[in-house]
Each structure stands twice: as structure tokens, then as C-alpha cells.
Image 1 (tube, rainbow, N blue to C red):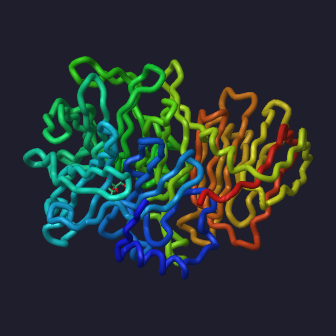
Image 2: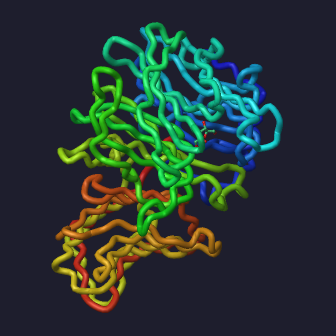
Image 3: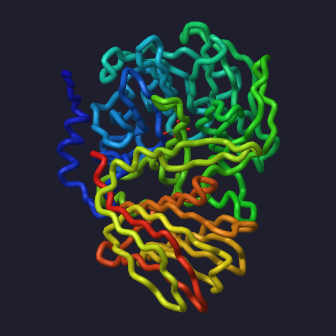
Length: 479
Ligand code: FRU
């Protein structure tokens, strides 16, 4: 199919030749050059998977947002497409912010927030955010149809439309800030162009719940209705909410009258350092898939010096158990990337270390917590961090190492009540994703190993540790 390249696409083609690649991912979607943040418009349509993302092509910093675009047949092998949306209209002149995609009778239809700064003062009252629509017949070139929904009187932070079809109507949730509290507003439409307000689906009760709820998503999985939000400004509570901003979910019942009866309060989706603004969609076979931005606002970004910034997480299949806990596990299609394989049935360590092959990027292993008698054991990734079981604290800890003190910190989950843990770990050039017990927990973090010092070792400190069913794979590139 004919693909016309814009000057921005051509700029990227040239600029990527001088990109540094020490930290550049092998099996995660990232910008070829420049900046990316949130995943946008995830969809399976006309036999293809399309992922879009917030993108500033010219520099590895956040700037006037474009929508970058990649396409795949299997959600694993991807091809870069020309930039899909540019901030080139009066209503979106300072950015085509986050949004979603729907299949309207075979037409790929995007909804996004057109963003304008009235004055570059940085004050919220000086912005205008409207929800806009764009369509594509060929899945590559997009025609903008302008704003379809304006902010209600008095609300200026009003963004990130997620649209879906249900109950023979179109529905849209939008994130908002009202009196410095986060809110998710629900709209309804018959034709995707005219939208009526239905209700406030959920909102922060006080400042502890966050001053702005970004990137809402609302869907049903295993007969539960799930609301995802990315609240800004939630304070840390003990081991929880330790990032600058959070992404979490509530489970409940979407009532006939459109309201949401909440059954479980907000819980974090991922427990690592770098997971934000996730979005979900339905795969070809109906599975609910989630992808997040593998980075965090206002965090130091060492790979900027290489000319790129930001990546998307691996796609995760999500499900919900009877008591309303969300599970996220890597999609099974990722097995297509596996090449070399090694396995060890058992590695027993007594106050010693065991070296694994650092060129393997996917690892599975089981830890029998009852049979391991030492205080601290796990997997060390030299110069980047270590995953350890702390038997006294009864926590699984990811401790990120870095020469930048702002990057040095721990994230952890509780192991209380567990007799065994199954770990499934993906280590790319500058990221780690740790899935625990088939997706009961996940920890996603950026890491910055020094390239000639990233030995992988299993270790047991002061006692014995038993690692079982260790499997390692080398993974191919996704592009
Ligand atoms: C979330 C977010 C969205 C916004 C976009 C701008 O990370 O702040 O609310 O649409 O990023 O790039």
C-alpha cells in the first residue's frame, strides 16, 4: 500500500541513524527517534493490530504531541507506520493528546484530546481541551473531523477519551479535574459525533485520591466491570503508591442507568517504578489486553542522551478473579519471540551465587518458600538491580541500582500466605517486567545496566535457597 511520508517521518528516518542504542529495547515498542508516552488507540481491526502512542518526533522530550503508529499481524512482530496525527489544526495546535480507537463498520475511528495553551504560563486555567474525532479507510492516513465534545462550563482539564460500544450505543469516558479532585465523566452517543453527558462514573472524595484522573478506561472482564484511572497526586501509603503518579482500578457493577456501583476501592495495577496510563482493548479472540507506558512523569530518563525516550510495556492479558482482583500476565503470543532455550530442574544454593547466561532475556523460575531457609535470596542483575525474597519482611523486593540516586529505590509486594512463588521475568536493554504467580502481581521498572556489567546471578545470602524449574530463553527483536 502507498505510504506518504511527511517531513516529520523523514526527519525521524534520518535522526534514527544517529540514535544511541545501549538502552534501546529489543522487544518493546519505542520511538525510532524522539519521545513517546501513553499508548493510544489500541485496536484489532480489519485483520491487523494497531497501536498508537503519544509521540514527539523531533527530540527525546515531551513536546506538541503527535500520534505515532505501529501495526502487527500477531501483536508481537511490528512495523512502524507514518505518524498518524499531527497537531496541525487550531483546536489541537498544541497537541493531539491521548485517546482511543473504535471499529465503526470497518472504519478505524480515533478519538483524542485536542489541546491548546492560550498563554504559555503553565497555569491550568490557560488551557483548552476538546475531544476530537479522526477516521481512516486504509488504516494509515487519517482525516480529522474536528471536535465532537467540548468541556463543561468551569472544567479545563478534560481529556483522554476512551470510547467503546455496548448496549447498542457508543460510550465515552473522559478524565477530568474538578475543584482539584479527579473525576471520570461518562457520555453516550448514537452516531459518534453528538455526545450527551450521562453521569459522573466515579470521582475522588478528597485530595488523597488525586487531583486529576488521567486516561480512564472502562470495560468488563470475567463478568466484572472494571474502571481504570491514572490519578495524579496520590500520596504514598506504606508500601503502596510509591510512584509520583499511579495507575489503578476499581471493580464494580455498571448499572442499567449508567452509574457504576463500586465494590472494591482503588488498587494499583502494577507495583514497579514505571507503569502509567495503561489502556485496554479486545484482541481478535476476545481476550482483554492491556498496555502501559513504561516510564513515569518527572523521573530521570538516562536514555534521553541516546536520542529517544519512552517505551510501551509488553501486552498483558488481563482477567479478574471472583473476589475482584485483576490479574495481568504476558500474552502467550510472546512465545513466538523465543529462540535459544536452556533449563535447569533445580539449583540449590547455600550462601553462594550461581551465574546465569546474561544474553537470555526471558526467565521463568519457581521458588519454594518453605524449603528455602535463608534471610535473603533471589536474582541479581549486576549494575541494574536485584529481585529478592526477604524472608523476615515476607516481601518480594525489586531494588533498582543506579549511580543516579533519584533512580535508586525499592518497590515490593507482600508474600504473606504464599508457600511458593512462580516468577516470569522479561529483561530488555533498559527494562524489567516481573510477573508473579501467573499475573497475580506485576512489577515493571526501567533499569539502566552498564552494558559490559550486567551479569545475571542467582544468590542466597546466609542460608539455603532452592530455585526450581528454571527456564531461560533468548528473544528475537519485534521489528
Ligand atoms: C498521561 C497524559 C494524558 C495526556 C497525555 C499528554 O500521561 O498526561 O493525560 O493526554 O499524557 O501527552
